[in-house]
Length: 386
Image (cartoon, rainbow, N blue to C red; front, side, top):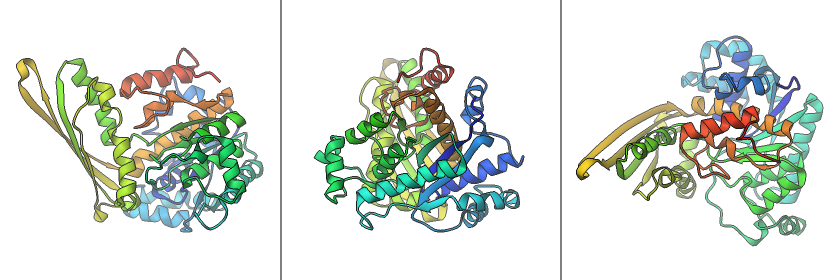
């Protein structure tokens, strides 16, 4: 385990997930809570990753609400413990001083924006005396992006920037800035991020690892456990429909049909791969403002068994989105830091355990993904090569 300090630079640093990350790390450091929810605190994993007390936070956001105020709002909603806020107020204010203005499309030439964002990350590393930096995108979900010629090669992308063009969606702008700054990049959202040929080429040029996408925190987490059960017992799934109710910033974003399409595509990934055949599986998402950071998912599964006998399964998942996501963001920061220390380059499919749509992997079964992750962390057969 490294004794160096590692920077965790959050895109969307004043949002609910990022604020929960900042509050959670500060609460744990103050002795106000244990590491529940952190996969990298399990035996066999924690021995290989950087300590929680060695992580330094910074980030970008277009919002300006102070973190302490955001944390107080989350405490009122029951997301973080209100009693712990006095313990962490000073630390949240320190993190606030490291946050910088994010990218607003159209406000400046995109090439200039990428260089400005990269300079912020570079300055963060220098000022804080950090050995490495990991950038994690936890900002709002973007609509799907149609691939353009400027996305297909780094030369075409840089020519577009030189001509004053803005060919990339915001998530990919942040990915580009991360790579130029020498940082690993992880996309916790279903947005485009680094999943364009030009961005993958940029990561290769700078010798950096990256991964994603769309953190697996609720309904899909359950699905990746139950679907293999049906396959193992030779029970034929005939349909798998889901309805999702959520509020907060994520709910407001997903009220946009185009952004909702990105999330629906990501949530639908993997079912056919796990079962071995296509299944009718509509996913419905609704914004219910009153729910705030809490989400409810209801799934209805029809299946048949011996002699074609029809049966069904229904389950309801109710959870707090930020409290489910925040520990996974910390896990991924520690794992990306490990990849940087090992000199790995390119997408890391072994992180698929954390994602609905894992880059570089068609494996969606949760426990198989966990074994792959454990092997990779231990540096055994599952480890990626640079």
